[in-house]
Amino acid sequence: MNTLLKAYLHKRTSLDSESIDIICSYFKLYKTKRNEVLCNIGQVCKKLYFINKGSLRQYEIDKKGNEITGKFTLENELATVLPSFINKEQSTTCLTTIEPSELLVIYRDDLFELTSNYPEFALVYYQFIEQSFIQAQKRVYSMLGMAGIEKLQWVMKYKPKFMSRISSKTIASYLGMTNSTLSKLRAQL
Image (tube, rainbow, N blue to C red):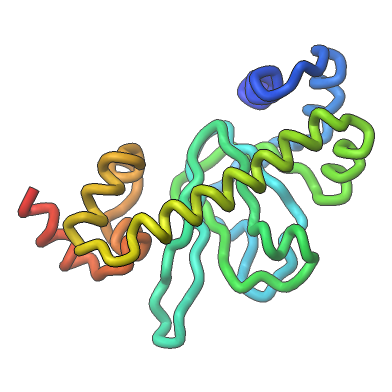
């Protein structure tokens, strides 16, 4: 159950196996169905997820009722709704599963207890926050001013797993276009 998480922690820390076992014991297995809501708009996100198997999507809904995907998370990665999780405030985005998933879940209070007791584990959490920020910045600034075909090529180059695992409609919302526009662009490649 915790094999991937243990490998994840061994790779990012020099913690001994006993410490990693203690940390992993705080994570609880949670199996989900496809499209299961993990944090809804208006809820406070109190959980951090490690993805053993499956994928997650974070999105918001604009004033016209359109879903705008901000982030996908796949296996061997951490996920949460960071602004809500950090500030303990209502989420403006929704976090859902894309496919049936196997997640390891830790509650916010437990996470911060562990980060106090294991400073190296705290670094893993801080690296997660930093990488989330960097990925968001790269995505935003990489796509500003890009034509639709360039956006599609960017995803194909930097996020190729998305194209094979995530629906066209959801990819289109990530790229800021309609599904029909995405289909036309794919035909041009």
